[in-house]
Amino acid sequence: MKSVRKLMCVLLSIMMLAQFAVIGASAAEDYTIINPYNEVIWEGADAWGAYKGTVHSHTTYSDAEDTLPVMVKEYYNQDYDFLAISDHGITGVDWDKAPDTQLLYTYQWIIGNPYEHLTTEEYIAIKDGTYPLYDGSSRDSGLLPILGANEFNHFSLTKNHVNGFFLPGTTGSGYAGAENEKGFEQVIKFIEENGGISHINHPGDWLNSNANPDVVNDPYYISFFGDLMLKYDSCLGMEVFNERNGTTGYDRILWDNLLMYCLPYGKNVIGYSNTDAHWPSCVDSSFSVFMMEENTVDNVKKTMENGALFMITRKLRPNEWIGPSEEIDVMNEGLPYPMFTNIAVDGHKISVNAKDCDTIQWIANGKVIATSAVGADAITLDLDTIAGSEDFQYVRAELFGKGGLCLSQAFAIEDGSEKLEYEEEELDFGAKFLRWFKGTKLWAIINEIIMAIKG
Image 1 (cartoon, rainbow, N blue to C red):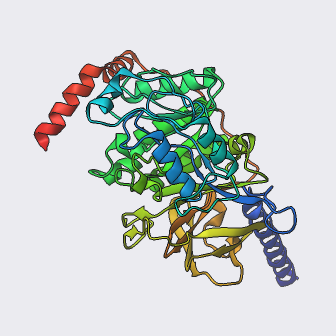
Image 2: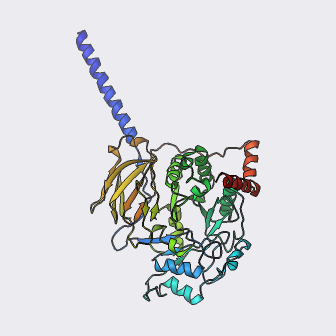
Image 3: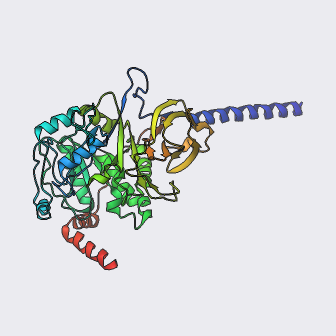
């Protein structure tokens, strides 16, 4: 009788453990993948367009080597669909009008680079697509101007630049900006107070990550940028790719770190890719593709805010963390760039179709979790087959092809837990003084002298 009772107890214990195991497995798997492209219609009569553009570019009104007409016509000939001229310290106006000018850039006249804008006839024809291309043909679609853009902190020596967008009139023209951390926050606050949106430009340039790649993993800088994005809703994200990525080759790593920092608070850090072109040869460097129903200013703004866009670059150095293993360098070669043609989320699976690429890699929490070849069929990532997926905060995809590298936005993973509430940390007197002093030109000049001595 005792043996029977003992056997029954063992069986009941096994049943209870099995039940707990099922409950535990269900809890671990109880999450939702948030698709940033959920609204996109990929095929059929109502399919959305894939519009190529950049929201960061320059002319001789600031520090570019070519005039506004030369730069605009180069974008037009390279089949861009939308363009924001964001000269340093100058809020963009219609391309057939002279914007405000800044004393700092009067050197352009001295070296023979004049201020010029389009004629009204050219402007109208470029906007409606009837302006002739270099070969004499027409485009049949126009180049959409995105006005009200400005690359702020133009008088800063530390390159703590922020792009503001959709600013009214000439608001922000002449805003010189403070240095370092102080300058970043002041201008982001200014943009928000004036009804604009912003993203942080080429953070690797300010961090000097070329000389010290590990700085993109530094908790101080991760929390600094992350706190700015959490404190100011209008600061949407950062440039992941910028021009030839000469000073920003590790900003993908910083982006992953910022995603992990901000997502617990419910904020997805949107990544952008911009030419930041100062001469025509860089127009085919880094750019974005926006998925939109129609190419309009309102839709461009909406897409900047909701993240239904992809980032492409033609040039990127190798890195040992997430690749590439070899340098990408295909600027101005006329190659089709890698591109997603369909994305669908079903439960714990993400399925994509793509073109003009041969490899896809998936990244979660800053690490490569899967890599596969790309063919005609859809590629599916099933998170239930990936060890540790219950701890992922996001997943994102990267396409590699002969024409460059294309990044998706992050697919946030929601497990139903309550989001953290952001509370600004109060700096002590010493930290406040240091941030103030680092925001001065004196600090910046001393730092430049020290760096020059070090070589």
